[in-house]
Amino acid sequence: MRQRVALLIAGLVMWGFTGNGFAEGTDGHSGKIRVLLTYGGHGFEEKPFFEMFDKMEGIEYKAIKLPDQADMLNPAAAEQFDVIVMYDMVPRITPQQQEAFVALLKKGIGVVSLHHNMGAHRDWDEFRKIIGGKFILQECVIDGQTYKPSGWAHGQDYKVIIADPEHPITRGLKDFVIHDETYKDYYTAPNVHVILKTDCPNNDPEIGWVTSYGNSRVFYLMLGHDHLAWSNPNYPILLKRGIEWAAGRLK
Image 1 (cartoon, rainbow, N blue to C red):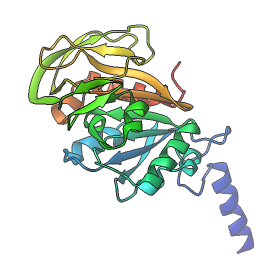
Image 2: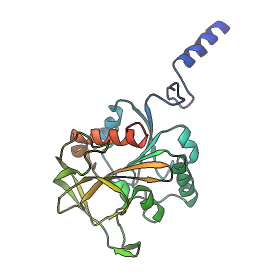
Image 3: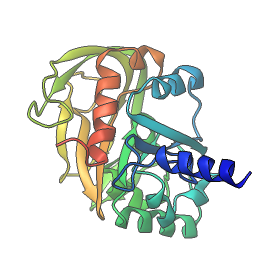
Image 4: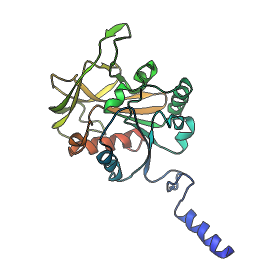
């Protein structure tokens, strides 16, 4: 019996099994990028959305629903995950959870914010500084400028323009047309680096950018309302590269 236990332990060590369920590489991290995926506060097509992540090579994920599981957004998450992918539009989390989330970003975990996540945490002004933008749900003042509520339109065909063809996320990609929801009159921080734009009159020009907050790399992608957007061949490329870049794996 002792010999069997010893062999079992040796096997687990050889395969790099860790308590969080991720295989561990020689550098103490999984060979795959470990993603904490948030959702909640906005309906979406769950089956094709999660299938997109299931098919993504080199990435493994744990999905949590906000605000119910918002306590997981704390500094300890930096030891278990490399990147947070945020697809939630939760109205708010508690002040204590906000503080813990900011502390997590100081640890340097990567951040990818998708589509309607720009409208999350509507009463927490710090969140717009984290992701570099804000979908305005109620008239507000930002940096001395008054912003009226943002607009949207479903089912639009519009052009995605590669604004920075040299960035690792967009390198080698060409302009393309996508069928997706548009956003209009939202706030974009002046210090973000825009890598994707559009000339669609129903949308603001900036639709993809990179920035930083604390010690974290941040990528925001406005695209991604439903399966019609996710099935565009360019979408999973942008998403995966964005995750890799946020994790520091893409130079």
